[in-house]
Amino acid sequence: MLIHNIGELAVVPPGPLRGAAMRSTTTMADAAVAIEDGRIAWFGPRRVLPQRDWGPALDAEGGTVIPGLIDCHTHIPFVGSRSHEFVRRLAGETYLSIMQSGGGIRVTTEAVRRATQEQLVAESLPRLGRMLASGVTTCECKSGYGLTPEDELKQLRAIRDLCGGQPIELIPTFLGAHALPAEFEGRVEAFIDGISDEALLSTIAGERLARFCDVFCDRGAFDVAQARRVLERGLRHGLRPKLHADELAQIGATRLAGELGAISADHLEHIDDGGIAALAAAGTIAVVLPGTSFFLGIPHADARRMIGAGLAVALATDCNPGSSVIGSLPLIMNIACCQLRMLPVEALAACTANAAAAVGEAHRVGAIGPGFDADLVALDAPSLAEWMYTPGRSRVRTVIKRGRVVWP
Ligand code: NIG
Ligand code: FE
Image (cartoon, rainbow, N blue to C red; front, top):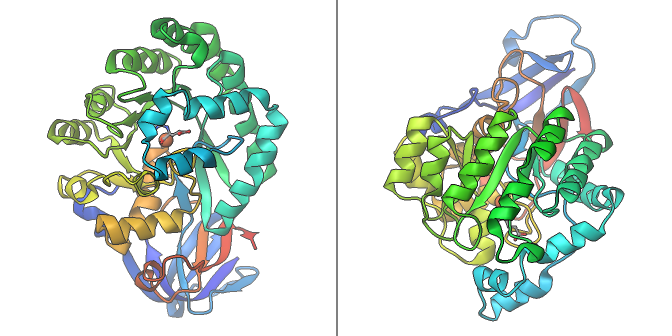
């Protein structure tokens, strides 16, 4: 396939892009991209396109073409709604106080435990369909609403089923230590041991049901020692650590992420200098989730400070039924620009090259280069600036996954 008449090609280099390198994407006017066997075979100015039969042509109509977006932190699959909690928060309660009164993650856990694997798949398909229409071609998906070995496996197997049922490539993460379920109240250590036991981790590794192991390490969730235990056990089964860190309070979670060589530390609203230094030393990707701070009405993570300190910042939706019921990565990029003062070029790097690095796939996706998967999005906007300048307006014209038009 040949994509031609590209008004502006955003040539994102392979991730991770750290600090000022997040602004190193170049733009190429009047460009073309040639695709062979699902990969980018050539890109450049149209006037120097090698003359041969590239197959069917796709006219980008003078719009911008970017690498497919990568949502590197979501809690899909889940079922049910917590809109009643949303209203309680608007009326003055907090996410933490609702969680401590028995609401929050436990409510979704009850719904997920009641649901079958097929129901988890069925409720997730429309969500993924909307993400595809917004330009997402790769998406990380977490378990974490089962909180028993069987129900966690059910969620991970639902992710596996979803891989075959729609075009977005899904990357699974095991988040067994997401919250303490009601039946373990007062017995945290027993829960931690059960959710990270040999049999469960062997099954997950054996069936390749997850690539990463994540823990919610925060006030009201699990402490650093408990998180370390789970993540070290996961590591022994080949699951690289990720961490929900510094979202609600500063308890040292980001330093743990650095110490364990986590692939990413996510949230970071309360990151401190020690945490930033730990991520820099370990090369850990800083995943910022401004949809969550927007949705919860809490201060945003200081992405400018992290970029200034030389970190590779990624952005994601955190799509989940409680703290960020947002499935639109373009909206997240808009919030990052308008509220976190990230530049459009940085927001794009954060949702492509750096998001790819946060899921261990930066050698293959998230960039424009020969040999990279031909995951591309054609926009009806003439430039990145024009795209980010118009929040709330869908400007995705065509989505291509591995060289195939998958939307519309
Ligand atoms: O990333 N912080 C922990 N977990 C999710 C929220 C999950 C939920 O509320 O259902 C998050 O924000
Ligand atoms: Fe999350």
